Image (cartoon, rainbow, N blue to C red; front, side, top):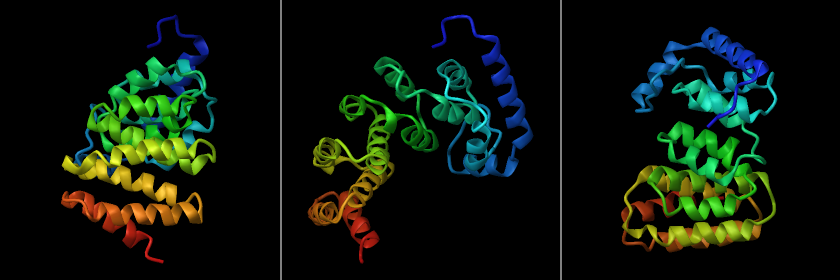
Length: 226
């Protein structure tokens, strides 16, 4: 994605980041992720809190972020999600990044750190909800994080999510259903009126012929029993 000569400052920043990652590596975390089925070509096992602390020394920088993203290394990809300048990432670049997210950890990190902050989130959701399972999950998690971080455009995003939920009766995908649960939880936190509306939606889900969808409604109601 970086098509111009890389600046000296960016090269230095990349070198500094790799040195920090190497010092922080944790073999136990790496093994746990592998057991969970989250596999990377290279995984130093650095914890998310440590990565967030590391990145505080660097300003958002698309040139650096794209270089980190292009490396097939767990830690550089996660750091890239934080360093991207969301206001300057193009729609085409966002779609290209989204198409290469292929595990739960990356979907969760990129949805929170980058995609929920995109100025064209609604358009992005419309495209990705017609995409792969990972792209659908990315769109839904991004919607959930957006709802938690902002107060505007909630109704538009809510209707997109509702429309997608209504299409799920033939889908058996627990990870995807968990991303829907995250959206429902996020919406319910927005206001008391919204919480009551989402509880009613959960009751409707429990009437589905799809057992996974029924469990989704049951889980939401269980989490919001009080």
